[in-house]
Length: 81
Image (tube, rainbow, N blue to C red; front, top):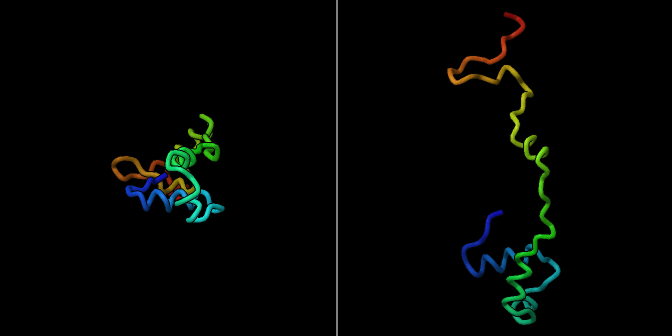
């Protein structure tokens, strides 16, 4: 997640996260501490299990002929040679 570096950017990020809130509500209805607290809402964050995280880090072997070692030589030999 990329966070904004200005107050206007924070407002835009917040309003994207809460599309039901109007700009007038943001400016006049809620206090600054409440908006900051609502912006830190982590209930929609989905954490990966350890197994899922390992799978994300794994190398895809869809085409084994594209896998090369540090010298640029193919790791697997072509069946035709």
